[in-house]
Amino acid sequence: MNKIFAVLVLSGLFALPAAAALEDEVTRRAQQIEDQVVAWRRDIHQNPELSNREFRTGALVAEHLRSLGMQVQTGVAHTGVVGILKGGKPGPVVALRADMDALPVVEKTGLPFASVATSEYEGKQVGVMHACGHDNHIAILMGAAVVLAQMRDELPGTVKFIFQPAEEGPPKGEDGGAKMMIAEGVLKNPDVDAIFGLHIGQQGLAGSASFRARGMMASAQRFDITINGRQTHGARPWLGVDPVVIGAQIVNALQTIVSRQIDITQAPAVVTVATFEAGIRNNIVPETASLSGTIRTFDADVRAQIHEKITRIATMIGEAQGASVTVEIDPGVPVTYNDPTLTAAMAPTLRKVFGRDRVYISARVTGAEDFSFFQEQVPGFFFYIGGRPIDVLPEKAIPNHSPYFTADESALVPGVRVMSQLAVDFLYQQQMTAN
Image (cartoon, rainbow, N blue to C red; front, side, top):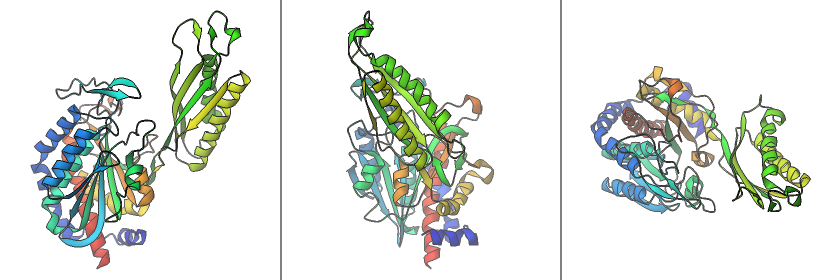
């Protein structure tokens, strides 16, 4: 397929007559359903669900896709939903993906449709919020499903709508997310030729978009460190082995990996310790302490070096103090890698929808996306759309995962347009090449 895209890129054949005739139709149909898309987004935002628990959301999506006359699969990777829209003409298969899960965050936006939901996460009762904008992604793809279903007779191929659970990662001890969907055959029957996905954020103004060819978002792995010491009275610490002090030494030592042991001129990297748990009483040196954190890299060799260094540093510090230390590093997710020829072929669609002066090349981002698993199997194109209100300065932008995060709803219709137009343009590019 890369050769096909290379031909398109070199020849500059992007303004395909048949597809161009559908641009106004895509725009018109997307604008007609704006109120409905906003309503979906608010309903989903007010009723968020954690990873692998997207039961209500999945049912809402499945009912919607069935109402459009699609073949629908449910229960994919626990709660995922897949809709298959067969066009009126034979052709390739393009997939559009949206993620459905929310985060264990107590919402503080003050929105009239703010979440007050609670759930259990890793044994704790937590608030639940769409703090990463997935509510917008779901509503956008539901809208694109309407637009493309209304145009099905004119589509030369098939569109597969993938509503994915657990993008934020399944609960510990469970499988889920894109990796599980792939294992259960989401890219097969019919076989997908290319896949597109987006993510909203306040890094850009509503009505803008950004992308980057090749490595765009980092790989990410979780690490867990358990320190086994010897409990004693806090007044006589010499009679035990203090895992809290050992954990503090490990935290400090891990900071030297990126700052002193990795050539960061070659590729950026991050090692962050995010949790430190130990003890139940102020005058008892506990038996154990546990740390957890995240690793972000853009290079496989750097990733391997960091894994080795975390394990060596933690275990040797523990050994030096008389404790035993175990380190677990999960496989995580790979780099979000945009196929360069697919990216070059489809970037004009972004410029067509948002305007040439409102589409930017993104810097590399140390956040991660399990869309990357799809990109390991088929060529994929992942991009950002802006969600920052026009009256908010860039330095005041609210980051994803914040309890205050929200997105300007004026970004929704452009999102519907771009997902719909990507499908149309891809199918017609392939048809032209085949002919």
